[in-house]
Amino acid sequence: MTHHSTFTIERRLAGSAAHGFSFWAQPELKRRWSSCHPDWRELEYHMDFRVGGGEISRMVTPDGVEHDVISQYQDIEVGRRIVYAYRMIVDGQAASASLATVEFADTSSGSLMTYTEQVALLTGAQSASALQFGTETGFERLVLEIERDLVLSH
Amino acid sequence: MEANTDTAQLDRMFQALADGQRRAMVDRLSRGPASVKELAYPTSMALPSALKHLAVLESAGLVLSEKVGRVRTFRIQSAALADIENWVTTRKLNLNSAFDRLDAAMAAFPEEQS
Image (tube, chains in turn red, yellow):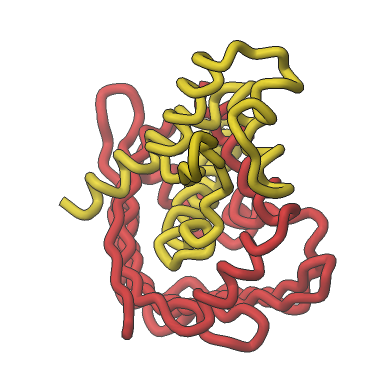
């Protein structure tokens, strides 16, 4: 059975909507924040920001598990909205297929970024969850991730 | 509604893990099931407060408990952790971390420079 989920993350950003947008649109700016695994080895990275173009990222974890993210831009409204479809492949198995919408709106103090993802979880998600959480180290990583998140959000 | 439920669950999980003593309990349970006494002993915590902490972890879906005779045993909710919903939780955590970095990167490269 396919499991679906939709979730939204809202973030207030210090810069304008146009500025926030550029950090998704320009490869050199996007790479400043999008990759977060200094210990993962990069096999391939490519970004072509236009409707029909996409982003490909293939990485290998220190224990040799390949994580691929393959995206295609569906709709772009400069400075306001990006819609892209992406799939995640873990260890050669499709883990998820998603439609992500990122919207940017100016506010009095900066901008509001709203990220909405509609995800279909596929077979690989189960085994990837097992990979990530099945071991003590996996769980410690999750706790560390949450701790890091708490530190950053305070 | 689904998103709200997810958020509430995530809130509970964050709150549960925001406490060092509770993280120590989770760490201990990740090595195997334990009784309240075994969990309280290493930190010389009183049993009632150990139970209070465990209740918080249990409502966050991080641990499970089972009473056999007079002994209540706690274990890590590995089924839940392997559960597919956690894929979404993990993705949200990763995205939030990425967006923290986005915010920092935007501050480091203000408008006029980009």
